Image 1 (tube, rainbow, N blue to C red):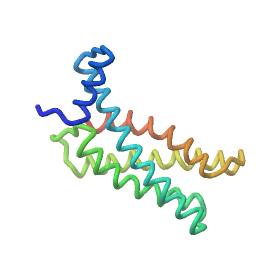
Image 2: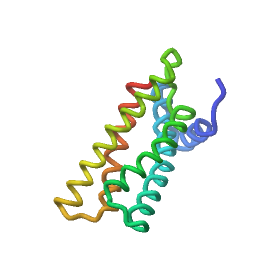
Image 3: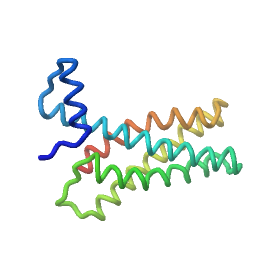
Length: 150
């Protein structure tokens, strides 16, 4: 099996710090790191579109959150399937896509609930609540995608 650049970098860092991991743990740590890279890019896409829609165009924050989240999910799906998760090839790709979307919609609902509570009830800035909701939903996304897609 060919190592990718992230795996090579991981192994070099481990060697420098004299870290040793079992194969299964190593594989999971590399996967989490890749998920993080994809997540950072998806988050930048999400936040940029949220800022554009809400702060520049003046679109209601809930609608802005839905639009930005949807755009980032499209990127996230493509990158996750290609680079992060070892998707079960025995499953129908359409079912995998639908499952990914369903999990993403649950994540969106969590995002909206967190934002609604923070902005409307606690009077916290919408962008700050977007950051908080992103952190919480990121953990949810990794766990559920790992369980259901692999």
